[in-house]
Image (cartoon, rainbow, N blue to C red; front, side, top):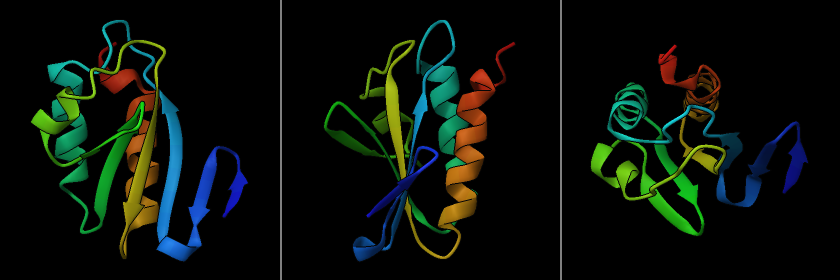
Length: 102
């Protein structure tokens, strides 16, 4: 496992991982959870989000909501598959943009 710039490459598992911060004012509520799920569904890779030892399917809005990730919380994006790197980068940009909520 290597760590560089917030990226962990879990080579033994073939998994790419990156930590992001929930930076919007209201946390990972329904609207941003929907945007994350919609974005994740564009990729073939298996994608999950991890928060406080709870791992959920990033392609499911209901699963994402169960994380109850609030403002300032750290969430880990994990992806495995042929387009894992693109998936992680795309979701990282979505988190960085505060889910495009202005």
